[in-house]
Length: 354
Image (tube, rainbow, N blue to C red; front, side, top):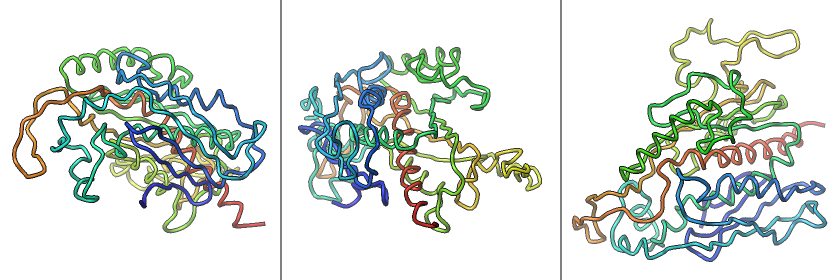
């Protein structure tokens, strides 16, 4: 099936379903000789895994990754890196009630009409569990991108929005709370709100901000493969993502050109960074920063009306273990996808000049 591979040179193909035996992937194009920190990879998975706090799904999965190929004596060999993550805590019976009907705002209906058949257990291939494979590959990409740093964090939950930009935050505090918001006071308010929404059997959306620092000049290709275009595609490929903006984003429309332009310093850096580190689709060496908007999780533990396969109106109720707000667990996914894009462009850049 098409659509399961991401990247051009640093290329990831993922496989597996939420309630299948395992999920996993094959990472191809990774250069040889990279020393792999397996603990760092597991740490990234632990940041994404379910059951880590009271404000996420309580599915209990260790998410232990097993590498099958492409690594020898702790270093990459340059051959495809195969890996798998076993599913150990499925409750497929929680989804028997939707075998013949479609959950609103899920992929159920679209998958059934596209393929004529669907795995209804946890959403099958459309489940966000697939993103664990991206986190593994992204963790390897991070280790390839030495010197470059990628930090994502929760900046908004519902209407609760931080009024600080990343320069005014201590991003080292992101992991100090279950929301993954680097503003401790705002994090407490967000956590309380998520718990309140959960008690109602409902869900809420949010925004993840991300900043990439120490980026070399020259990443990105002209016209169709612009750096921000590929970052946008990467983020919009994540489950539940509804919006992407970089640099000044939509707020830039309020400014005049004389205000929005980024004047140069003598060393080529810029005095301001409304461009978000990307000009003409190519990195200019300044910080890349962007925001990713996530919708509320579609499964609500409430009664709802929907249709079955025959088009009949039926009554149903949400069941199973689900996140009341997806953004805390999505932080490492955003970082992973950014790392995959940047690793791909670093390798591609090696082909354009001597």
